[in-house]
Image (tube, rainbow, N blue to C red; front, side):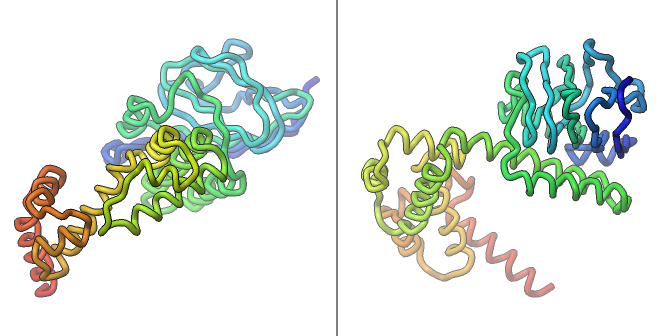
Length: 305
């Protein structure tokens, strides 16, 4: 006979229209500590969330399931069966069949959060998370456990604007998972240190022209690796990253100083003020002069208030 050595806490939430309007809303949260030999899955969940082994189930929402202890297995309609060890996360997607269970010899501790909304669909549609790669590393486990602990504490306290708080923590978890997966491309610490050094070098090079090929050589990596790794790490090519921080500096100078357009252009590495004006207009949607007038007008209105 299976041993009942489980401890479980969970909640399922009604969703108001304002929660949907937020862009991401939470449907369920919970955690289960399931000892060796515990029957799985528990039969106490609402009908639409239950599944029978080995038949699995299909949900109409996203879920993040984090295993913090023990081991087991997971498979889905878009991925092969995988061994799940402590420190692993697997993602469940709407409309995708899946099944999973702890190893009867060890049991496991599982934490989950279910969610849906336009923002969740946007992240999948744009390839940040894919049905073909549902099993992910959790990264630093202390941080992941802390985030799930925050979720459970908020639920138990029934905090004001609970849905919005849970949605924010869900996005933190997703951002952390995405960051951990990106680190696999750029490499572990040595690769990340190179990209961080490059970012510091670019931020310190606003006034001087900089050759990206020479920067890569200075960092002792090939330009091809540097450009690809930098783009994956920041979402921008080195050239566009430098342009963005130059334009951010230009906006600050336009709104907070009386420097001429020529002086500002030189300070951010543009020798030709007309070229600077064209680039600014293309990226910002306003000429530098119009940006300055609007920014300073808003600042004056704010000081009057």
